[in-house]
Length: 235
Ligand SMILES: [Zn+2]
Image 1 (cartoon, protein in one colour):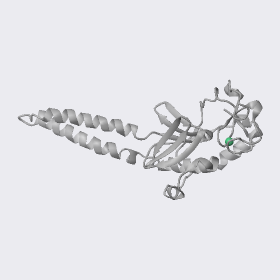
Image 2 (cartoon, rainbow, N blue to C red; image 1 turned 45 degrees about the vertical axis):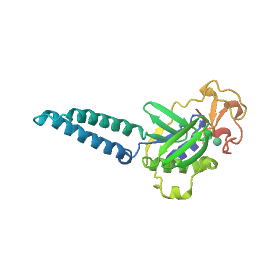
Image 3 (spheres, helix red, strand yellow; image 1 turned 135 degrees about the horizontal axis):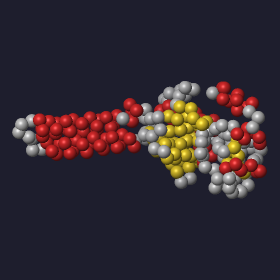
Image 4 (spheres, rainbow, N blue to C red; image 1 turned 60 degrees about the horizontal axis):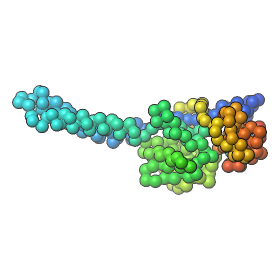
């Protein structure tokens, strides 16, 4: 990370500084445990059914049900295996969960609370709560808590002992991406309440992502106290 930080600082046009984030795919071993068990049972039943119906002579009467039931369980396992955990992104634009091509995103400035409930980390903002299963997303959660502690520490409601049990964030973790297509038009400037009509009129707090109209950027971010001025970046 030192390279990109240095680059950001020496750039002459901070309004065009690139925002970055990391993309984490769920730990496939953990997230597929459930689907493996279900899938295994389904495949077994399917196999037994096929054997009973078409290979064994005479055909076993319940074989048809085994085939149908096995296919059903297998299908369900694949379906649930797919929905239990999604890729997650953590970085300058907050936290986002990928569902196919859809991104559910909460900017740091919009997060009200980050807490643990059972095996899930809940990141809640007004009207949206993102859920991350701990078992499938240890590395992402470790990064998320580290970044949240630096950017918006007041919203973090997670015990230190939980953080200690997570893997240490490493620079090689996740896939580095440039943040793109974050909608800011339609939001209101946090300082002046002026409606942001065009993306180009927006300036963002580099720390928490709070949105300001370019003519009303305060000296300090109203949400996180970060010094702004020329360090506010374009959307
Ligand atoms: Zn801020």
